[in-house]
Length: 262
Image (cartoon, rainbow, N blue to C red):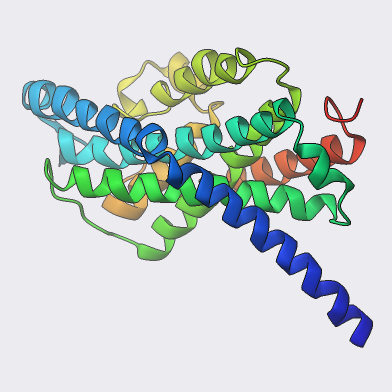
């Protein structure tokens, strides 16, 4: 029992150190990590909400600005959770200090959890800031606090893991921008952030249900407004499966040393 306690203590110290390093990294350069997404999301509220919203009117019984606010907040959480891990892990590879972590007596799962926790922290922080900004443009309801918190945490974890996988395979700086630009952002825009999929023709509705971000956006919208285009139970099931698959892939790549160990 004593040996187990002595073993757990260094592991917890290592985990706390990695998490603190990640949080310190993005808070130290807040003008690059926190301010830009806040400004970008503010522009979405101004353009889509204040300028275009009045012409659209209501969406599923809600004012257009109120309807899209949860989607814009979720968009910020997704992109920042992903971006934090992919940039941090690739930076560690590029600067060669990832080797110092790998040779330390730390289980790979702790390394993975540490990086993911950093992504979750940034995603949630940016989400809170964008939520505060949203309050200047529209009222925000809270239909279910538990669902809202759960979907934010799970979504942050999922895209932090996805960012980790991108960081593992990235070999140059361009590689950490390709996936967010050509895959992540199109999926976000087509994930029901600015519209209800009920507006789409039947064919495109069937295509849309293949987009995992659709479930996250709608589940978060349900948590805030009590309105969703899809089943909440189904959304959480998809999200848990998504996280499990990404976690196993991430841990497998880390254990193998893919694109890390020469």
